[in-house]
Image (cartoon, rainbow, N blue to C red; front, side, top):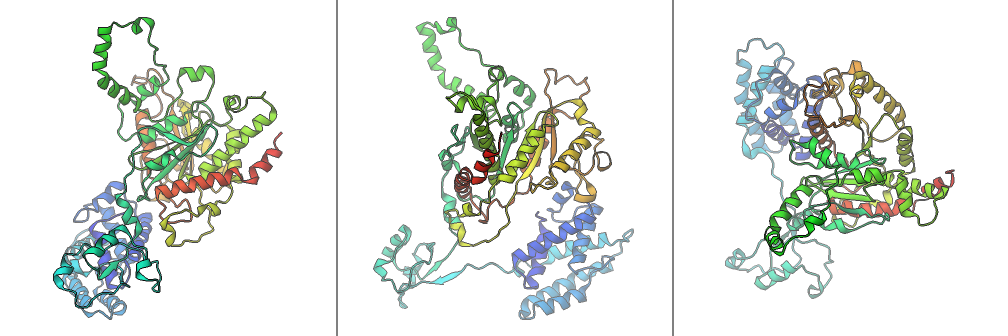
Amino acid sequence: MTFGRLVFFFCFIGASFARSEQEIKKSFVQTAVECAKEIPVSGEEFQKLKDTHVAENKNVKCLVKCVLQKQGMVDDKGMFDENGSIKMAEREYADDKTKLENAKKLYEVCRKVNDEQISNDDQGCERAALLSNCLTENAPKSSATPRRPVILKSDRDVSKDQPKEKSEKEKPPTIILKTREHSTPKDERPASPRSQGNDVEGTQPSKIAQNESKERKDQKFKLMSEPVKLLDENLEFNNAAYEFLNDANSNYLVVGVIGTQGVGKSMVLNLIAQNVPLNDLSRQILNSHEVSPEPTAEANNLTPVESQMESLNITEAANKKSQDKNTFKFKMQDIEFIERGVHCTKGIDMYVTNDRVILLDCQALWSPSLIEETNTNPVTARSANILTVDCLQIASYLMAVCHVLIAVQDWFADYNFIRYIQTAEMLKPSLSASNTVNTSQESSEYNSSVESHPHLLLLHNRCQLEDYTPEAVYTMQDLYRNAFQKSNLQLNSGMYMYSDTNKNGLNIDNVCKGYNVDACGSPMNLFLLPEIYSDFDNRDIYRGHPQFEQLAKRLRWMVLGVNRHQITTVPNLSEKGWFQFCSKAWETIRKCPFFIEYERFLP
């Protein structure tokens, strides 16, 4: 979390204490989080800290005072402790007299804050805010220690009498990796294309070693217009999505969804994929179940003149059709699929939004239509067992490659579905052997035996009025809390319908006014989406919950705002590195003996 000029001040103070930039930020964030537990501050108030001065809000000023006090800058009354700050600077930074003098001058300027007459300031929050403004405004810009690039001496022979005019015309330093031995002859050394071009003009006096990720920033990648297959209908891994991934981006979010047939998995992912809010979202979801009318024989009998007129408007018609198609990225069940009782999604569909959110939509679990598709022979008991194992492998796979896993149900509660999630977690193998990804990011080794686990969001779709009562929410959370008490899946990630101010320190709006800790218990990752009726726009009917559009918007920002933990043991894994990990993870899961042994015990 960035706090604007206040962070700049602490970077200056940290520099005078000989601490690195990462240590400064880490210390400041830890201090701010500790203070936020004691002094609740809303998100809007945090945003005000980005301004030049501290916002005119007592909680914000008291938060600043708490941070300054924990840093040893002020006492309990908010008075600036100049002597203590100077002694600390002299002890920690005794080698650089210049910056020590700068710190003393800054403290001397801002000690006037202690002489200010402030009324109704028993806690010292107002005085601490004045001190913060004074320090941030008067801190010298050049006092922060700049990060210097690592300069490696070139192993090529450099002439000492090289003319200055020739060196000024040379191109910028070439980015290289120092991987060859000094004993290798110059003619046999491998060189990059850029370095070969520079050898014509002259020899570079020095080379700057930089991160390879900077070289990949200029690489082009395609934007997705529709989902592609990650696993096809035969559960074979598909590499078609590789060209849509950005190798220079490591700030992405992977969201997967599981559920039985017809519970609304594709609809939930369509809600998350919406970058622009739709005013008629409920109506478009209702219309998605309708089958597009087929052209009649009368419409097909067009005269040649009418056919020519249609050909003139082919571009406009294609654009309109594309806009209607792109409203929802994932195909949802229409009335034809529902009447036939078949599933809509086959394998795992993958879509990457422009915000670099990777959405994974999997096929229905335990769908009888899957048995009919995958078996040409008569259906037997073993056919059902094979389907069960395939679905367990898909669920374990999504647990291994996703940041967030959404478990969708359309009623409370399917005990078999809960046991299914527990079994998939139990059978999921350790993927440490699959974490060796062929990327340059392995240069910084990170050894950890801790297995990562996704955030699990329990989502109920098509909820009725009685499902939104505080008693029903309490019953749901109590059941899930007992069912997953021994699970490693993360169920307390902030994707709540109401907030626990005693635990979180932050206030968020409750879905319903009656939701609180006393009535519903401690919050967990549970969310309810209502049933959409044909008369949804009738405001005279009491629904017992906010509008569907408001809940869909809340669901989206909760999922996108969740903590993006490290999926593998490779730090800062890029999108393409994650895709390579997905390929090896699926290969490991398909060959895992746990699932084969589990099938033997099935009836």
